[in-house]
Image (tube, rainbow, N blue to C red; front, top):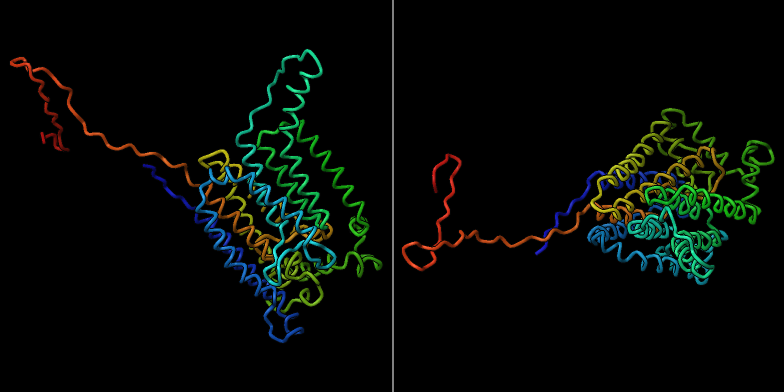
Length: 418
């Protein structure tokens, strides 16, 4: 018989729920003006979609938390294969929107496979690093090329295969094109290299390769390269209404909000920014709720990241530790990049703010990650042994040949025999 003590962390659930509610508030606030202009309802379609996907996300999180963490480890390769298949299918059968092939499905039930690739990468790498053995410090000299190829190079390539598979998913996502999501997956993978036991030499080599690949991805698309070139001079007459329009308007909105904000619903950013409910939702937050509102959003998301990293050190298994660490790194990286993009520290690269920006696929993927993290806190089942009846050792009766049982006496808390 096995016994399991199911343990949930209320802080993870509470902070994720608080971030989702704040997201719904600001999605409605940032989109209602445009909804009034289009259909007169005042209810943004992004808000309706977010509410619909929230129910799906909640169900998915509950189901993910009910699957034991060791089962997630067993399913890691299957999850990764499904992820790669979806990334290929979206390039073949996906539908285009704003020049990008990122979505599959029909109408409001369309999904963006790249968002689920973030969680798939965390689970896949966590499963690999959980069982990864250290490379021997000294290798016996091989007599010939064949032995060296079989005993050294082939094992080396096998150790590099997870990084190669993750790089393949990043390339598939970049082709959509979606360089921002690919960059988040790559950065999360690098963060997981540290607890995964990857050597510094391998990390430096991977950083060099990733830097070359990232530079090539920026250079091959003229609009990407132009954004990076124009960003330092975004306030010039030539750039302010061209490549840097979104960044300039977001920076202007946040600066005009000051400390206390101009007031909910009164902001200007929602009327001029094209991505006011998605990548640049922080423009509305900063303008209408000011510095205090921005710090409040940062506190909720930062608290969630801190809690995940703290619980990673208390996880009952190494795989669970790596999952918690990977999800925490993912959320932290994406939050920081989005906020730096909104306040013009970085050029616009298309990364949503976790739980706050509109996007059904992003919301479902995030809540699935919360469910898997809750599962990572559940210890492995403990087998209960059936209580055995205490028997006194058999002794020989000196007066006969029969075996007699010696009575066992115990005492109560007052010392009396019972």
